[in-house]
Amino acid sequence: MKKILIVDKVHPYLVEQLTSRGYLCETILKISHDEFVSLNDDYIGLIIRSKFNVDKEAIASKNNLKFIVRIGSGVEHIDLSLAEANGIQIITTPEGNAPAVAEHCLGMLLTALKKISTADQEVRKGEWLREKNKGAELSSQTVGIIGFGHTGKAFAALLRAFGCEILVYDKFKSGFNETYVKEVTLDELLQCATVISLHINYLPENHYFINKTLLQKAKQKPIFINTSRGLAVNTTDLIFALDEDYIAFACLDVLEYENVNLQIPLKTEWNDTLWRLTSNKNALLTPHTAGQTYDAELKHAQTALEKIYFCQNLLDNIHNEPN
Image (cartoon, rainbow, N blue to C red; front, top):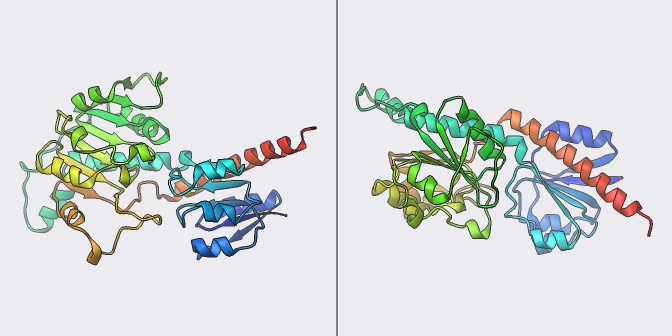
């Protein structure tokens, strides 16, 4: 039987459907990189989120591997060039949680505009500061979206209903079909946006994409949102921008200090930057949960199944072609 190893939690739908199609799914949730390497070379597929790095050693240990499914979108922990060289297909499911991430962005943005979080804390202390907590309406904002992939598009679609202006910059794409967005250069976006939302993958070239030099170009003291990858933002520079009033507020679901398992260090091991960030009253923080919804789990499974089936049919057709 065609065996698939699952090392991270997935929706039961995926296992049920793969099994009905003749695959043998083996789930080992408590497994390390070294334990994976030591397993028998019996698997044609690996389904993973962020359990461990799929590096040279991991790939070399599984010569029969035909595809790797990364539930989600980030593939910085997978050696893509080596996988390609070994004929391993890389499958991702960014469509699965794009609506969830978009809704999280919207929730964080409304929380910032309406000052909901700080007002809640003040009321709990007996402070009833109505004038101080006067907010702004989303319809009056100019939202700049950096990166117009699945999540960027999903966020723009939600924003459309609020009547705000939506600016879009994407380094790799242009000529968008969505009539309710305006394609601009990065400099134009930084000049005009009162809200900047980051939706880019983590690539080496995107390391610290958001930095002091770029943030100093922001002319409208924008609210900044990051639900993409922590390493795309220089946190020290972001705090500088908050302190110097280059940006008004930061909404962060991801931090550069996350490890491969998407966990940050224990509080006893925090550096000065983490302490400064968590004590900053103009920062709203969540623990990489933007895409974590029950609905997204099922959507990830449905997308993964469709792509695995397509991948296997493609490989079968290639192998069955006459010489």
